[in-house]
Length: 165
Image (cartoon, rainbow, N blue to C red):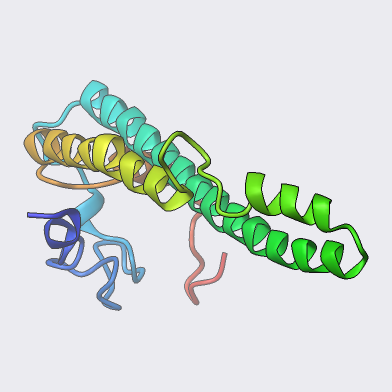
């Protein structure tokens, strides 16, 4: 089962996030799915919160890799234009140098940027997602963001009758 299959439907069984129906506190997007099971202690919730934050860090890193991939690709495409312009300006030798040494060059030995992204996904990211989900499944009935939900409850502003704060 991949992460999209595993995540499908989470948070929707009792109202709350993704359903448009009010959760336990009457606000759409909030509900019992973010309440920890009664047997889950504060230390476990805290540990799961740190694990979740670590996963979020890998998500950001993965996004940076995609930015690296896209930006490097744009730079490589610009090199073709630079080669053309150097030739037109009478600098064929320098155009040849840029074309020979830079256009289409591997960013790592035998790898283009898309391969770097794929290697990260295959060797690190997918394992991280799977392990985080397994730990969360085993310890918290698959519920996400339990630490944040507790923080929200502790720090929450009292709602006025009309729903405004």
